[in-house]
Image (cartoon, rainbow, N blue to C red; front, top):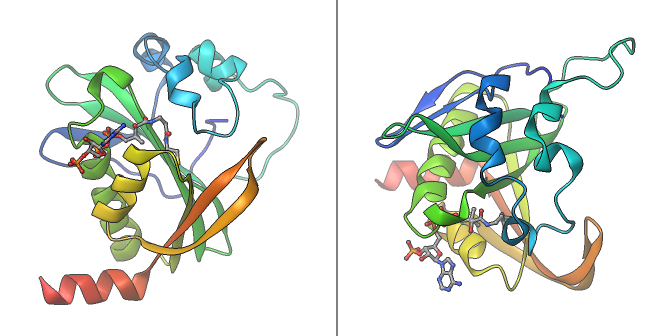
Length: 190
Ligand SMILES: CC(C)(COP(=O)(O)OP(=O)(O)OC[C@H]1O[C@@H](n2cnc3c(N)ncnc32)[C@H](O)[C@@H]1OP(=O)(O)O)[C@@H](O)C(=O)NCCC(=O)NCCS
């Protein structure tokens, strides 16, 4: 649920602006966020909020007092069109030192390097401007595009779970990790 963020600020790359998604982005999100092909390897089908994105911005229980979320959710805006064509999250952030990553891009824009461009910027932000020490992702072994994104962004393949459960679906999945030390080492070489 997109409600509140502790550290979120906008980030920029050559083609993209990564920024807080707003209710005014709901029409852009509706064009792709509920599509079936986005969820082939997501571990579950699209939920109500993903099919009707305006629901993501409405707190269903406004009377419940919540702690501010420590998670990051960026909408990926394509500068050329001004549309939000992706979402990238660092979620399940624990003790300001660990978080999981997940990303989705509108299918008509797959294989143009957009997710890699966004993920590289987020990795740089996380390891230069926050205290996080580990980013982690689980990726279905059949998800070629996502496995490529992990490799291109320098994540280390740490293991493969056989017949495991990713969210609600059973599959073989890879676990990738990227430590702050890995990032510092890779940047020292460049
Ligand atoms: C995974 C996903 C975010 C990748 O986004 P993207 O913008 O297409 O990624 P990129 O273009 O940066 O990199 C993907 C690479 O994989 C390649 N690729 C993607 N699908 C492929 C396929 N079926 N066969 C071969 N190569 C493939 C692309 O050509 C690209 O190649 P490159 O490394 O030579 O550039 C996108 O496919 C998506 O939204 N999938 C649905 C949601 C999802 O599965 N998210 C990840 C959950 S772990």
